[in-house]
Amino acid sequence: MGGLIPLGDASRRPRSAAVATLLIILVNAFVFLEELGGGNRFVRTWSAIPVRITHGHHAITLLTSMFLHASWMHIIGNMIFLWAFGPAMEDVMGHARYVIFYLAGGVTAMMVQILAAPNSTISCLGASGAIAAVMGAFIVTFPRDRIRTFWFILIFFRVSYIPAVVLIGFWIFTQILNVGVVADAQSGGVAYMAHIGGFAFGMITARAFVIRDRVAFRGVGY
Image (cartoon, rainbow, N blue to C red; front, side, top):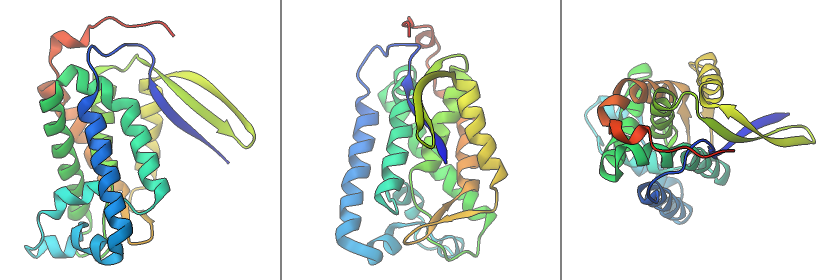
């Protein structure tokens, strides 16, 4: 058993605090606490259920579902990935553009999943699609940046510096291998098609959101 946990971009220092990324994390945490109190009824109300949306109902859940999570591990894992890649993209997009990009990526990811399984009654939820969009934009914008990464295999572990193109490339490769598989959780799951859809959105639209003169901001050693 092993894994890779990205800790952040070691190749550059953002020019300003990642306030939007932190705000998104706080909103996710707040909604998760609301879930714990509201239970399954809360989740079914605000998660995206494909069959409802394809029949013209609850379109707002395309947005709200990206702030719901199925478990503590689900939200912690997602927020770790967001904090690893979000600040650098927020820095080169600007706070407002970054928030718009994040939300658009999440909605697009969920729409891709719904198109893949329009009659599904499984609750789709989680920030993974939006975060995949951030990762897609990152690999286009900073492919050579080194990502400080904690990796472990059984009882062996260490921190290494892995090129973004390798780390993110490996991640999206595993998502493609799992197309069609839904990760079941307490109240449903998030499909890998949502991850792929979000990632593609990020790669395709990154240049439209990135402010080019911010990309060359000075890097730092590692």
